Every structure is written in structure tokens, then in C-alpha cells.
Length: 434
Ligand SMILES: NC(=O)c1ccc[n+]([C@@H]2O[C@H](COP(=O)([O-])OP(=O)(O)OC[C@H]3O[C@@H](n4cnc5c(N)ncnc54)[C@H](O)[C@@H]3O)[C@@H](O)[C@H]2O)c1
Image 1: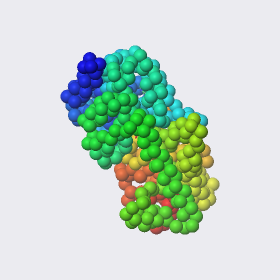
Image 2 (image 1 turned 90 degrees about the vertical axis):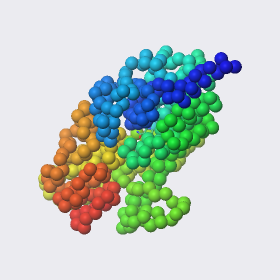
Image 3 (image 1 turned 120 degrees about the vertical axis):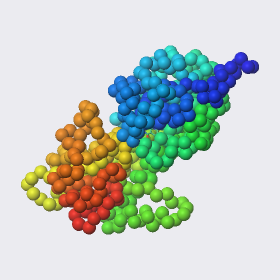
Image 4 (image 1 turned 30 degrees about the horizontal axis):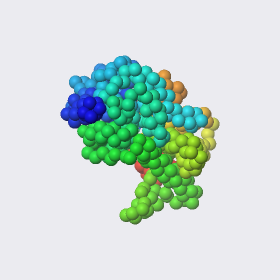
């Protein structure tokens, strides 16, 4: 009996005594937070990534993330090391997978990062380890994609498998340990081990009844946001046509102490979660003969919101007819404030569409300071300009992402035409709220 449970007890003891080494595969927005949190508790970590430039920065103590200081990254030095070499997987007691889960052009799930990495790490996985998937995905992934690939082990006995969705919110003021963590397991022992692990870094851990329940919970959270953001943006468009300010309506409705949660309109959703994750369930539901209509409609409205914003910006700028090419300045390219993430960002789409309409478009974003070829391809000829010196040169200034670092007094004073898509600023003349 003792022998049969030896792997469980050894790992339990190591996690409890903070002797377990935690490997994090994919040191992105999610992975880096885990490394920082385990470091705080003096738990040794290894960060795995295939991006050599990122690894090099981390090794040198330079933060690849604008909202995480170099000092914090340097603080990891004694506790962590980074590598692209998967043989180091065998040094880990726990392996947490935080790889990207995007969608393909046809909106079907793209699990290639997880599948390809699994192929590479499989030979280094050994008995007595706990593998946790944190990437957002459809119910059934952990069991089907990871579990079925590890059949040479007795899952739940000599190898442990969990799914724990990540609730990381980059740039958020809420401390990581104050956000409840959900976890789950292939078996009871798997749940016990992952609960024990996460209790080291967060105050409260909820254990779901199965891997699929935990996977579905994350999707519910993101679909809830997608649908409600779609709803409020649709109402914004209706309100504007009726000359009603949606923001005032939200403020009034928020006085109700129950049954109403405020969502705020904007130029359209972005990031690696809201525009993508709902399609994981849409695709999976179809396999069960179900059509997820809310997901489909919300996705369409979220795309329409950005197109509507672009059309209205163009209309406002073009009102004042002159033969010269109008110059437009976009404030904020990141998909949300105070971070540098431009994945699926409305700002990029607005910039690209207005450029195609033959406006001269530049941008200003203190967080998005990139020099790589992918970024250059996305922004084309547009330049990241210093607004303190140049704002007066633009015919129209559009606030797309309301970073706190912007000097709003100066923006309000010196912009010729000012458009606000975030309800952040106001002025009397030559001002439009979209
Ligand atoms: N960003 C968020 O706020 C957030 C929040 C909750 C959940 N999630 C989910 O967490 C997962 C990771 O998201 P993220 O935002 O951290 O992604 P990310 O792109 O920031 O990080 C992923 C990292 O994995 C690396 N990578 C990609 N393919 C690899 C491979 N084959 N081998 C090794 N490394 C590889 C990349 O270089 C990158 O550093 C996704 O499923 C996402 O939906 C993200």
C-alpha cells in the first residue's frame, strides 16, 4: 500500500516543504507571474521557452513586460533559471504548461503549441511528477490531449495530472494571491497535489469536480465578458443614434445594488482571451450537436464595434474637406490600458484601416516600444511619436487606449479634433465620444 502511494506521498511532502521544483513551460504573461509568485515563497523554478530573445532578456535581468520592472525580474535570479532545453523537464517535480492557445483563421482551436511541446517533453517526463495545464481551452483537452499522450504512466498513481485555469489580469492592481484559484485533477490525488501547490501562492483554492468542470469554468468567465462587452457596445451604437450617452445610463443602472454588473463600451475587444476563447467552446459544442448562438453573436458584434469605430472616425475627420491628406494620431495601441500587449488589439486594426483610407496615421503608446519585424509589419509606415512635441501637427487625435501615462491635460488643450473611445476625457468643442 505504502509503495503504491510512494509517488504521491513523496511529491506531497516535497510540495508541502517547498522542496518541489516548479517548471513553467511558456514564460509569457501567465508564466512570468507564476515564476514571480513561487519566488516570493522561495520555491525553486525553471522557466522554459522557445523564444531565445525573451530568454536572453530574462537571463540578463531585463523585463520583457512593460508592467513588470527589471528589479522584479532580477529578483528571480537566485531562485530560477531559464532554458529552451527540454531535457531540464526531468529536474522538475511540477510542470505547469502556460502555452498559447490561439484560433486558426477559420476560428477552430489551434492547440499546436501544446501538442508540439508535449511531443518534445514526453521523453523527459518521469514518474512522480505533477503536470498542470493552465492554458485556456475547451473541456476535454487535458484528458484527451495530455492524458492520452501519457498512457505509459498510471495517471493518478505514478504521474499526476491537473487543469487549473489562469485568472492573470496583466496590469491589474489586485494582488495575485487575492484572486481565488480554481484547480482540478485527473483523480483525487491529482487534485490534492495541485491544491496544495497553489495554496502556497494564493489565499484561496477551489477544487472543481473534474478536469472538464475547471476547463469549462474558465470559458464561462471569458464568454460572460465577451457577451456583456458585445451587449454594451451594441447599446452604445443604439444610444448614439438616439443621442443618449450610454455612459450616463451605465452610471444610473449601477446604482442598483443587485442584478446588474457594469461593463463599459470601447473600440472593440482585444488580447489573447476575449476575442479567442469563446470560439473554443463554440467549436466543442458543435461536436455535441449544440450551437452556441450567444458566442457567435457576441463575436460578430465585437468585430462590428471596431469597424463602426473606424467608420465614425473617418466620417468625423472627413467632414472638414481639404485637398491635403489628413493626419491622424492614435493614442494607445495596446488592447487595454497600462500594458504593452497588442494581440488582437482594436488600436492596430484602427491604425491599419485608416492608413488604407489614405490618412497619414501615427500613434503614441508609451508601453508599446517595440523594434521587431512583426511589429513593424503591423504598423507599416506609422511612427510612435512623442506627443509632448508633436500633437499640434495632427488634424485629429483619437484616444483608443487610455493609458494612465498620457498627459490628458495637454491632449485636451492641444488636439485640433479630439475623439475619445473610452469615456476618459471631455472638452466642449471639436470633441466626439464614440
Ligand atoms: N494573457 C492573459 O492575460 C491570460 C489570462 C488568463 C489565461 N491566459 C491563457 O494562458 C495561456 C498563455 O497565455 P499568455 O498570454 O501567457 O501567452 P504568451 O504568448 O504571453 O506566452 C506564451 C509563451 O509561450 C512561448 N511559446 C510558444 N510556443 C512555445 C513552444 N512550442 N515551446 C515553448 N514555448 C513556447 C512563447 O514564446 C511565449 O513566451 C493561453 O492559453 C491564454 O489563453 C492568458
